[in-house]
Image 1 (tube, rainbow, N blue to C red):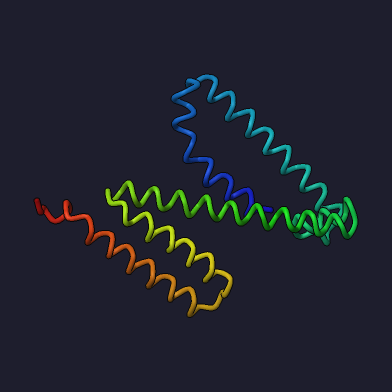
Image 2 (image 1 turned 90 degrees about the vertical axis):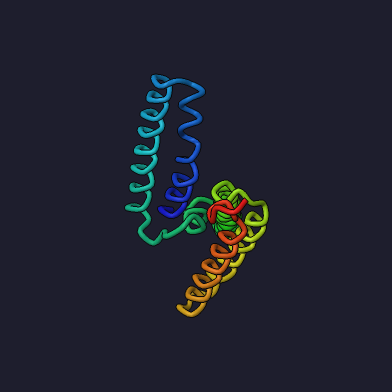
Length: 155
């Protein structure tokens, strides 16, 4: 549950400046305070639920409490689908950011594939897979740096 909240916040924070520019400072502060109160209340309700049912560790377990074994499968599938879409959103955001920083379209393809590779490598959470992923990301970064000749002062 905490991971889902952290993922949502990390993606949502990127849209904060354009929203404040569109609606203004005072309505933005009111919305931020209101959503903060709502998030605090939601955390309180989740805490109360956790105290009443201490064996609940994820959304699928909560679905089982609310709707039995079918609820466990439905809520577990929904959580998995949510995590897939969050990962896709992070990969897309990262590739757009790197494309903006390097001013080269090839980097979008390389960083999208890098995000795909990272998702695949996280399925195998051994240290060797993670170190291989790190080397793969360093290679892609250096390749895209070489494509951006403006940094070298070339015409």
